Image 1: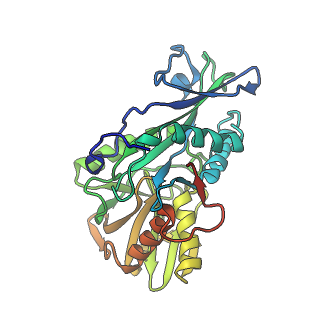
Image 2: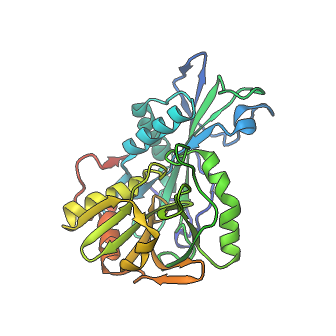
Image 3: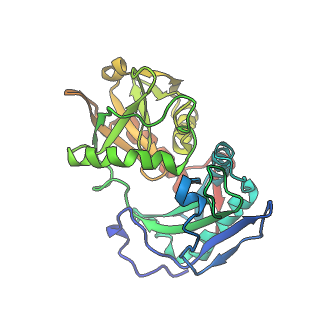
Length: 336
C-alpha cells in the first residue's frame, strides 16, 4: 500500500489528523457495536461529566511497519487489560478487552497509509480513550460514555531523539498512597502540567517523583517509568502508586530471557541513586530514553547516557517490535 506523502523524518510528537477513528457509545447499560468514522470532532453538553469532574482514562500504544513490510502493533492486549483496571477504579463501564483490541486493529488498518515506513524513525501512535458523556452536575459517575480510538503519525517523544536527559527530583507529588497513581487517568496528567512546564523553564527534561508518604524512594516521572542498571542487574522501582508500564514489563522480560540479566523489582531509595551506572526512562512514547543526569536539589548524579546495557535493552526491544528479533508468543498483533 502506498504511504502518505509525508517527510516522516521531520515529524515531532504531535497530533496529525488521519482518515478514520473508531467510536462506540455506552447507553442504557450497554455498549453499541461501534464503527469507524471520518468525523474527528466531539460534541457534548457543557455539563458533560468529563468536563465537570474529569471522569476519563486513556491508553497509548504504537503500530509499526516491520522489516518484512507487515504492519504490526505491540501487545495491545495488555493495554486493553490496563484500561479495564483504570475504568474499574474510576467507576466507568469496562470496554470488553477483545473488542478493545479489535477496535485498535480496525483503526490502524483504516489508516494504513499513515503508518510510517520501516526505517523512517517514525511510528503510528494509537490513542484509545473513554470519557463520561452525559450531563452530570452532582458529584457522581456518568450514565453514558464514549470510547474512541484515533491514530496519528509521530516522531520522537523527546526533542532531538535518543539523547541523554537531565531530570530533577521534584518537590511536588505525582500521586498519593491509595490514590489513582496506578491507573492511566487523565486527572493524573493534569496534576503534572504545572510541574513539567516549570521543569522545562528551568532547563530540565522531566521531573522525577518520589513517594509522597516518606519522600525517600523513587517512583516515576510524569510520563514514564524509570529503570536503573548496576553491573548485570536491571533494577526497577516498585510501588503501588506507579503506573504499570507495558514497556517496562516488556523490558524486564527482555532483560531476563534475552540478555540473561538479573532483575530486581523493588523499592529504590533516593540514597541509592549514586550506586547505579546507567538509567533510563521507559514508556510507549519514548521506548527508552537514557538518563544523563539526575539533579537532587543541587546534587548531580551522573550516568552513562546510552550506555552498553541500556543500548542492548533498547536494541532488543525495538528489534522485537520491528520484526528483526523473534518475539515471545502473543507479543505482536499483525494488522496486515
